[in-house]
Amino acid sequence: MAASLSIGDVAAATGLSVHALRFFEREDLFLRDIPRSAGGHRLYDAADVEWLLLCNRLRESGMPIATLRRFAALVRSGPGNEPDRLELLREHERSVRARIAELTACLEVIHGKVAVYERHVEDGTAAGLWAPVPSS
Amino acid sequence: MAASLSIGDVAAATGLSVHALRFFEREDLFLRDIPRSAGGHRLYDAADVEWLLLCNRLRESGMPIATLRRFAALVRSGPGNEPDRLELLREHERSVRARIAELTACLEVIHGKVAVYERHVEDGTAAGLWAPVPSS
DNA sequence: GTAGAATCTAGACTTCGCTCTAGGTCAAAC
DNA sequence: GTTTGACCTAGAGCGAAGTCTAGATTCTAC
View 1 (cartoon, rainbow over the protein chains, first blue to last red):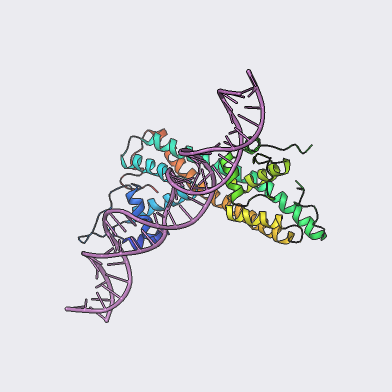
View 2 (cartoon, rainbow over the protein chains, first blue to last red):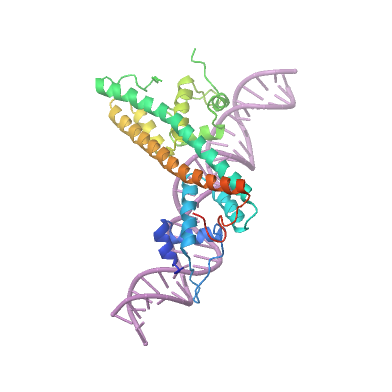
């Protein structure tokens, strides 16, 4: 077991580019120093992929690299700081919920605009919608 | 009526910086050429503010400047292209809904992690959470 | 044993969306 | 009338998050 994976394998498994994986490493986002083959090639394992998949979720949901780095550092520094990790994750959870709320509010405005245009386009009477005087 | 507003007034009314307002103008995001005072100062009106507030919603919800510019161009070019404006807004609405769905999916993963850490921190037994072997 | 694909490093470059600077001009309060 | 603050232009700079290049090396398949 614990067969090691090349950077290309990991790129394929995570959707990250090989460039991004090297960048992540420079940015200290891994939970360990990635070992190398005799020739200097990186040797990943399944746990690295696992971690990257979580990273993807955190990144997709708007966590900045800097915060991800702080989280990785906490994990890397071993047991004892779990309350800190928890607080970091909770804070991110709050920010994601807030972002969803913000988007939902925007959506109402946007959908309202869509509805206005739908009515006017249906009517064929689109005059006075936004030019020169705004309709709303 | 139709008292004109200075760039500072508009900045205060919209939350955009004066720099951003000049930038928006360079980027052709307004619905008209903003008139100037004798001394060259910009003279905005309430409709400009109205439009900027909509722009804020579109930007906050992730619309790129380039798309906003396309929308502004459609409006500026007068009646006749309402179906195009509608399609642009509908497309944006779709993308906002998709983004909300994506965030909601991430939220589940993140909340799952939070729950794991909560249990372990509560127990006092945080061993084996993510170091060296991942828990999930 | 050799061709071709994958990987290595260091560092330059890109895109987006502003933000800030420099060096002035204009306007309003005292 | 002068000081103070707001505004002007043009253009440089910035932070985030990678992406891409060049040139060298290693690995894999025949």
